[in-house]
Each structure stands twice: as structure tokens, then as C-alpha cells.
Length: 142
Image 1 (cartoon, rainbow, N blue to C red):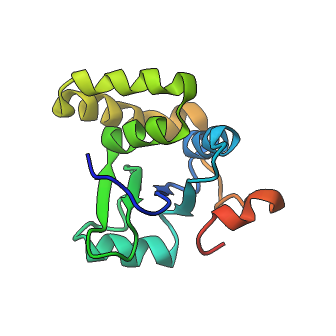
Image 2: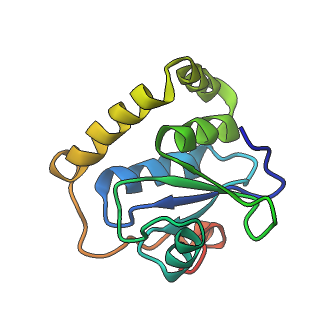
């Protein structure tokens, strides 16, 4: 896994109920104020994903951006991104990193299954949710 020298940026589907709950979960547990967030619907995400050759209209994947703006900028997707989030928030959530023992193709099949059904189970918003004012500094392009 890539070592990050800057704050990892979470790119998430801003209208997905599950994704918004996951962002709230991470905000609450990011005790060292390391994570930053941007919705996949933002111009920021579109530009960044295009730079990495990824279709910015595909909202079925969560991404972690490491070393944003640096020559060694990297993009982690799906389960690899979640493993990075677990490492970043640390504590008891480090146990989730044991998921690395599951081969990436299988981890991503599980991820894709959840992604396909997330709107039906967790709902979908009409617009991207706005962050709580105390967390606004953690969001790119609000």
C-alpha cells in the first residue's frame, strides 16, 4: 500500500444514504483530523478522476486519494479504499484491516454487491448533503 504524506481524501457518492452514513462514521472517529472528503459529483472529483483515467460519472465506487497534487498521487478504489480508512481512523477499527487476507478480487466482488443495492437498502438523496459547520473544513469544494 502507498504511504501518504498528506491527508487522504475520501471521494464518495454524495446522494447515497449508505455513503453519507459512512462519511458521518469516519468524521466521528477521525480523532487525528486526517481525512478530507469530496463528493463524486463535485468538479474536484471529476477533474481528479479524469487525471487518473477513471470515468467520473460512475458513482458505484468509493476512492481514497493519497498525496493529492504530488508526483506520487495515488488513487485507491473500493475495498482497498476502505482498508485505508480503517488504518487511518485506527483504534479498534484496525481489526478491519484483516480483510487484506481476502484476495482483492473477492473483496471487490463483495464491495460491488453492496454498491449495486445501496440505494434500495439505504436510500438516495435528491442532492448532496451539506456538512455540519464544525466539519466544513474537512470537505473539499463545499
